[in-house]
Image 1 (tube, rainbow, N blue to C red):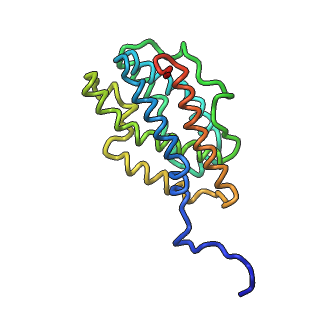
Image 2 (tube, helix red, strand yellow):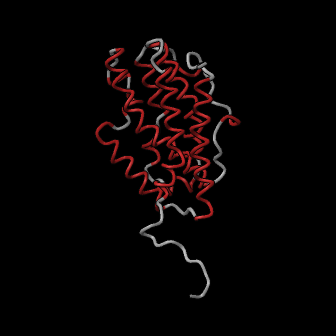
Image 3 (cartoon, rainbow, N blue to C red):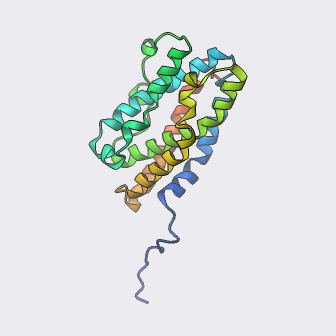
Length: 209
């Protein structure tokens, strides 16, 4: 024994995905509760408001991510993961006016994205949310009679959603994130979901008691 403390064996050390899952599970549940309470409360009007809110929140985030060479190098299929455009397309299929009359979320309301580590945390939150939103699609289709062209934002990649998620986690595990940077990554992911909840709740009909 030399008195030094060694790192835990690789086989017992939690992966980034496992740590992120533990750090954000409660936040994901809170987002889901917010959406369940508001996304379909007033039929198509509520659903359109939800799509507009998601477009406004995601657009500046996606622009920031794609504007980072280090993020694009870490997530090489980043351009195939954009979701704001899907929300805009669904609104068009619903017969709604264009979303250009609604400004994206101001920078002060967005999660931190000052480094690659924080960007990856935010991307994890968004990718995880996309996977969970598929559960709302059933309600949109059966409760409101919406078609696939009006619910593309909720469907993620259909049957390929799980493979898309696995690819993202593989990118994440290869990312140059040190042990010291992991807490910052967790905080960015949690902040993204917290701020999304605040943004949606501030919008009619999402204002909850």
